[in-house]
Image (cartoon, rainbow, N blue to C red):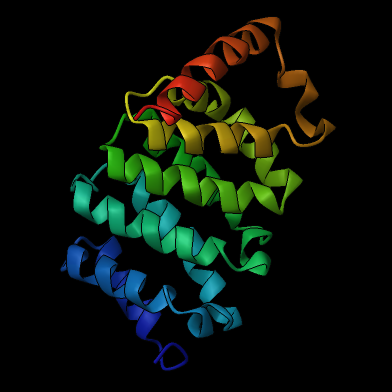
Length: 190
């Protein structure tokens, strides 16, 4: 199916905002399969999915959720996470988080970003330059313990090496130190 052009057809439908929810659901279902993700041409879907998320005409939360899930699925393949198109995916996911989406969409975007930044310094830098550190820092104090915990993991991945040292400020360190206590308390509530 993938090699027969189904992915391209679904991406075209989704980006033209015709049957976009169904198209996004089908793309996510396809990319959720490891065997499909292993096909090299599936990485070509990263840029169109990112463009779709950045498109001002994309307003439906459900469509955004499935597009972000599809990006998250693709990001699980290390080669896809390192591809040149992954930079646009990181920007789109940060932009999505800036809009303060639902808790589900926030979790999906944060987890997808984790996959993208885990394997690529370029993606870590892109997230930082797109303002992602501040957005993720705000998620550390989310009322949802799950969101806060995943945001903490993402912060750890972003600063896992010295790539982003210029983005570390005393305010960030102070904020992270303070929110670490909050996240710990939220995570271990009974």
